[in-house]
Image 1: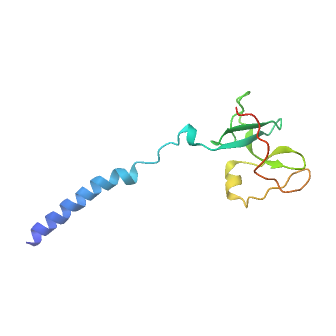
Image 2: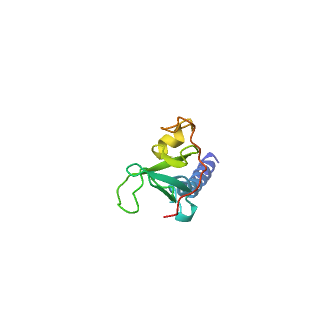
Image 3: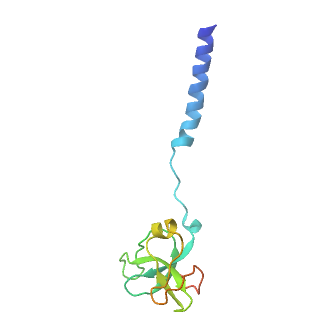
Length: 116
């Protein structure tokens, strides 16, 4: 009787493992392009701003191909988008960034540049 129970428990355990393994270890699926959020990037060389899908930081400049674009935040006094560092810095920081010119807090909302 103990032998039959042991075999039954082992069979159930194997069945559960066969079902659970692909679910647990299949890895993350890539995010589709249309699901990526659009954010403003600022070119660290020219100061030009772009509206692009959030992927990497630094992001490649659409014209030059150089990785000079970083996420930006808006200065209401300058009425311009300012670079605020890498995506990781933006997400892990306290969220408060100040304009390098006016020392006033930058905001995430502002007039959007053209989509690229």
